Structures are given as C-alpha cells and as structure tokens.
Image 1 (cartoon, rainbow, N blue to C red):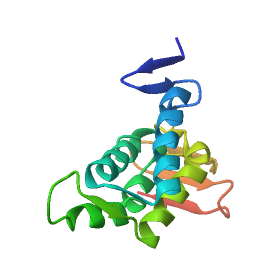
Image 2 (tube, rainbow, N blue to C red):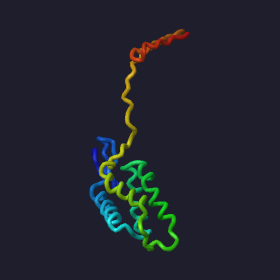
Image 3 (cartoon, rainbow, N blue to C red):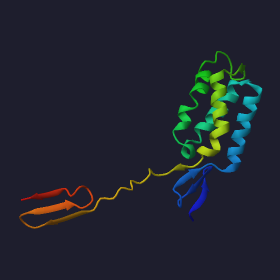
Image 4 (cartoon, rainbow, N blue to C red):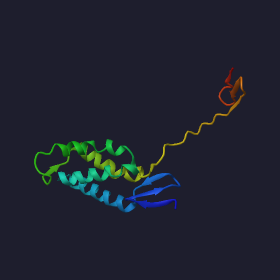
Length: 146
C-alpha cells in the first residue's frame, strides 16, 4: 500500500509526503472563516485555532510555528478566563487570513529532504603500495599517493 491514512494524516510513500485529509482541512478553514468574519472570539476559541494549525506541522512544515506567533502572543496576554471575548488585533487577523488563503497550497510536506541531483563520476584504483584516481566530471582533478 503506497497511500494510507494514519493518525489523521495521509501518508504517501509514492510521493514521500504527509498530507492533511480534505475533511480536516475544511474543518479548520471553517474555524478560520468564522474568526475572520466576526473579528472577535474567546481566548479558548483562538487557542483551538492555533492548536489545530500547530497539529498540522507534519503535513505543512515548520511554517506552522512561524505563522501562529501573534495568536500565541494574544493567548498569553489573557488576564481573566478562557471564555473572555477579545477583539482580534490586525496582526492576528493577518495570520488568520494567511492560513485561510494558503493552507491548501501548503498541504503536502516531504517526509525526506530533497535529493541532491548533482552527479560526479570518479575513477579510482589502489594496490598494496599506491593509490590513484581522478574526477571525470569535476574539472579532471587528479589524486595519487603512496
């Protein structure tokens, strides 16, 4: 099996990527849309959105940490209870709009780093007393030793 769903992620060994299923993406996008439209919500609701985005980091990448900072700054500034309503600041609204607009395009993070596709051809030979070699594609660099 090359593609399967496990722990809320689609894992593809064919493309070597983690992805978020559409159902989960739609749920997060609906949370984001409601927050952007109302421009105010509770600390609990903002923490739910920020936590949902952080939970996607396997499929979206480290950008999750970077583009939730303003949300977490706001959550940390709470003075009373979690259910207190707040008006969202422009930086928080900007983060929410970023995620609403770009989450579909960011979905699909590689399991492995990209392979280095540069090729070097090296010819070598060795005996009990000496060695020699040269790089045919790297400027004809010659190596020899005793």
